Length: 300
Image 1 (cartoon, rainbow, N blue to C red):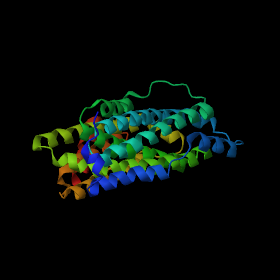
Image 2: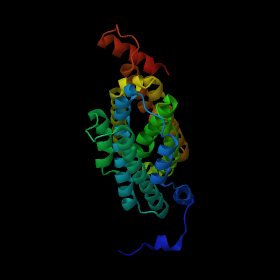
Image 3: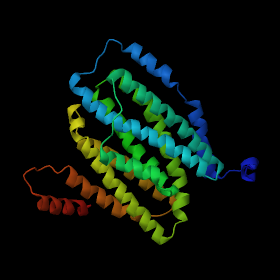
Image 4: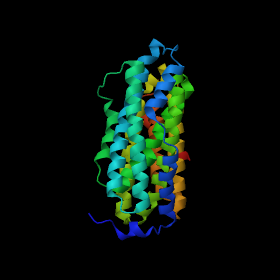
C-alpha cells in the first residue's frame, strides 16, 4: 500500500491539527493499567465491598466492560477507514486507550468481584451492536463519541459519587480523563461528514439517532434497580447523561455554523422518553402516562 502524499507533506487544516493534538495529548497521558490497578489494590487491601453492592456493581460494570470492548473495536475500525491524517492518528490513540480500559476493567472485575463473563442486558447490547455493525462512519462517530462515551462518563462519575469502592473511585478518574478526549474526536470530525449529507441522508441520520436514544433509555432503565441498590437516583444519572449529550449536540451545531433546529426532534424525543421511563406517579395507567409525558415534553 502506498502512503498518501497528503500524509507526507504534513500540511494540516485547523480540524486536522486539532485531531492530531488529541493523539499527542493521549501519548503524554498514557497510564500503565496493570501498574495503576496493582497499586490501588495494595493501597486499599484492607477494604471490602458490601455484599449488597456486589451484584448490582457487577451488572453495571459488565455493561461498561463490553462497552469498552466495542469502543476498542470501533475506534480501530474508524482508524482504518479515516482518510485524513489527524482523524486517523486520533482514532489510533482512542483504540489504545480503549484496549487498556477493557483489560483493566476485566482484571478489576475478576480480582475484586470474582466476575464470571455472562450476557449483558439485551437493551444495553442493542446500542453497542448497532454502533459496532453500522457501516456509516458518521453514525459510528455519533453513536460512539457523542452518545455512548457521554453515558460512560456519567456512569463513572456517579459510581464514584456512590463511594461503593475506594479502588473504583480512583480508577475511574483515569477512565474519565481518557473518555473526555475521545468525545473531542467526534466533535471535531463529525461536522465534516454531516455537511456532506443530502437532506434525505440527514433525516435518516437523525432517525437513527432517535433509535439509539430510545435504546440508551431502555439500557439505563434495565439497570435502574442496580443503581438504586448502590445509592443512586436513576433519573439523576439519566439527566446528567442527557445534559452532556445535548451540550455536545449544541457545540456540534455551532461548529457547523448552523442553528440548533436540526436536533429539536431529538431533544423532544429525549424528554418524552425520559418522562415515560421514569414516570413518577405509579397510580397512572399507560394512556395517562403517555398523554402527560407528551405534553410535558412539548412544553419546552
